[in-house]
Length: 391
Image (cartoon, rainbow, N blue to C red; front, side):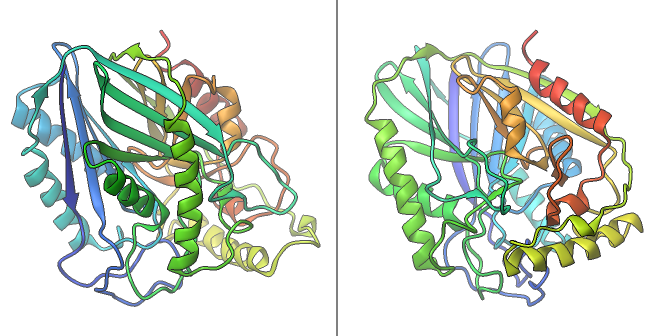
């Protein structure tokens, strides 16, 4: 088994807007903290995986495919698979800016081929999980979930722990929408603190099924101090997991991909069902949702574009845990269709698409206005999530 890791600074060399809130229209050039692409790679005689976790709102499938084709040519290996994920921070450089996206893709190609591999023997892996609302919980009044999950995937060479892969499913939207700087938000804060505490290890981050989860009802402020406080709560939970005894398994690499067709319908939404107990912020987002719905119907939605016609779903089986990568902003309820002791659902991966609400969801929310998937499509998604990589 061979392993490599690197961090690439992906901050734009020129001003851009942020990406994640409709009010972010000013071009900025101030960074509160760095933005990175964290790249890890494993390869053996049969498999070659490169994963990029980027401090971005999204990274589309076209550019993921471009990277995979480039790296397959560079390494002369058609078995090589690229999986792209984003932390989904709403305060990164805008992925709607073509100049930045072109700069980013060129940078990722140039830097990733500098990966320095080292030979490992007796590579093992462990997986732990914990239910925690340290950073966020359901952001929808009256709708609760118990799927807020911290996952810790740890890699060892014999007894030497060399790499930790974190998972949490909560929108990185602690900060105010109009902060005048870029930030990697709570994922960047947590990773930076871990790197300071454990400099001998590498760290990366996977954003989970966070369509319905944010810090809205957890945070006590929306400045960086408030972000730090919530980040410290999550770090405390991570520390508690690190102190537990673990069961290690031999690492294996098995990657599968499957494309799922998306069928759409623009079912009218009955606004008379809006709950009377919604917060002003929730009412505001519903108004924004109506605007985005009209744009989507006219195929003029700046964020989502026209309705997505298909999604690339990937499964990465590492023995102790199976990761299922899905592009859309899927609700955490879809985790209920998986084996939570051995499987994690990762969002914002290999592309980007609107929200996927549960079948029969009745709450009138912002998310409902951009979910146009048919019930049959959602059943196909569930079947694929359950079965991909298991055969």
